Amino acid sequence: MQENNEFVDKFWHSIRSDMTAMVGAGSVRPRPMTAQFDGAQPVIYFFTSKETDLAKAADSAPKAQLIYAAKGHDLFATVDGTLEVRNDPELIERLWNRFVAAWFEGGKDDPKLCLLRFDPGSAEVWKDASSLVAGVKMFLGVGDPKEDYKDDVAEVKLGRG
Image 1 (cartoon, rainbow, N blue to C red):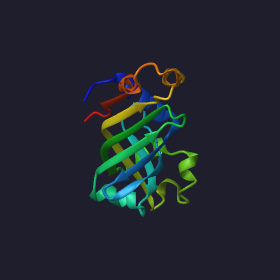
Image 2: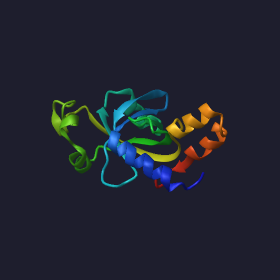
Image 3: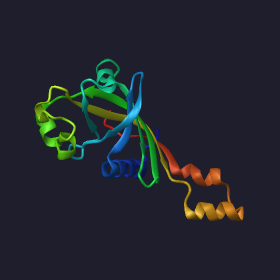
Image 4: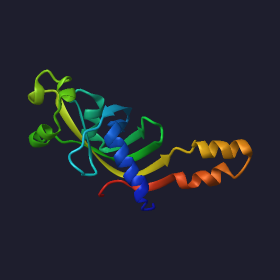
């Protein structure tokens, strides 16, 4: 797995901006979740209900996968990692916002509130290969699109582990 800071930096910048990814664990298929971040740490948090399949899976099957597509479709990623319940009151306080509050009638003390921590590990990250230049080259029959695209995908390490 290569150390490619360009791909790592693009991933973190993009997901911090868009904040939506698909997350699954164990036999629970990935579902859309809103990402939360605590400073510059390479960790992603998700608020959910303790009653969801994803929260239950985090207790029994910590291996998880995050699937990400940037809003502008200029970056895609499949990220392997671990998922765990992390109901730390101080952390919940830092991450709490009005969008999360809309889902939990009892606020930060709602008995259904569950905070999940996703620790990313290895990832495959793709940059968009359908640029104007690539399109023109393909139209003109110049170059090899597979050869041109090889620099637009990388296997990288996103987390600390």
